[in-house]
Image 1 (cartoon, rainbow, N blue to C red):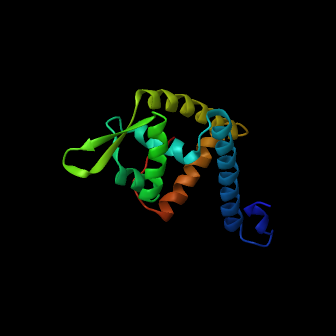
Image 2 (cartoon, rainbow, N blue to C red):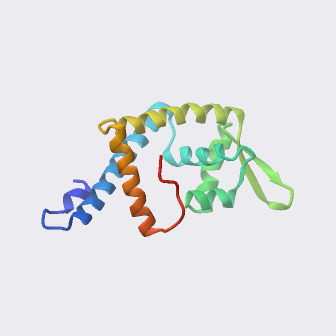
Length: 159
């Protein structure tokens, strides 16, 4: 039973919408996790860490990775240890702080991540292929309004 099944017709539409959003997110994430495991023998947290590093070609400090991924330093360390053993990331000394490491994708890591990211994009596109371009843009804009209501900050309106 998914989260949406908790709602009944007598519940407010906004509650039912919230549960549908959560359900869709969980179902898509479950598919992505399975596909990452089956096609790349990896996990979503590993993919997420590599995605953060891909955006920072010079690497990132461990604490910055932890903050961006919203996980503990211990989680980042464990994933980094695995990816280092596989030659996908490397640890570099930080000159101004001998206690810190800068983590960076290796050439193999960049190549591997590029392949995973292309496939990931296809999986996400497939999840939304039941919607046309106008519907996708409309849903994106509507959810942007909700996001602005909950967490006001400047954000572009178009995808």
